[in-house]
Image (tube, rainbow, N blue to C red; front, side, top):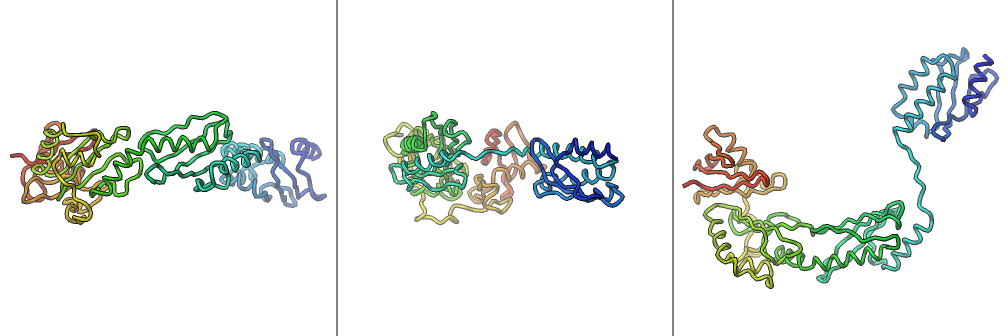
Length: 383
């Protein structure tokens, strides 16, 4: 008995008996340089299988998920010392798995320097700061009066380490950084980037204000594409280059063949009329020889219809952009819906990237051109 008690004291010197009968032990168990408070209540016969282990809330939280292991070790350990040795092993594994690494808070000068930087920049530029001063949101206006936000994620070694900056730009934005840089330098670089993108946002704002944009419904400042309504179930999708926003964009006409074919011919015929000095919208009007319908002229119901297969307008964010070319039908479909429909018909046939099949509504034989890399399907009649 004396040898056992000596071994217990030698291995766990911070755990001591609290009564003469030695049925109550209280103290600390050490693991990975940390001490955890615990209390062990033994029955009169000192049998561990009927013992109780009381833990501090820190120890209980760390051993969460290991209770069955601790209980099993208590049932099978021959003595208290053996149990404590195994408990320490379980505790070290739990600490390793939880990866509880204590991170020291930044020094006081970290906060004081940040507050000084924000004061120099102007408190009116500050939109948000979290309680740890690790995330800061700043605002700025471009020359056209549009407000933009930049989110600055400060790292532990700021300003020695460059922060992460998140912006809603159509191009990548990286900050030139040195250990002497500050929030002021980030904001100035942000303003310079806004100025370089002013022409792009002017172009996109004009399109959003003067045409009916079908997609995206709520465009962000980083969105470079617009799908613009041309009329009943006909539209054009344009992809604008943010660096050269007044140049001819990538165009894709969507709709019935008898409607969009003439537009494609006009584009090819009048492309020499494109003048980068004019706005993109004016150039599109000139080369396509059309006026774009605006909100004041048409209602959404005038040129938007539900898909004739799934009976929904939006499907995973996409709207119907395939139209039967039969002038007496003109039913629109989602690309993927029409593809699945034609692929499921026994009468359909496929040749490379072309599927031949009947329109689900008028049964007129049609073909579906599949461009797999864009999942862009063009639907037109066969004459």
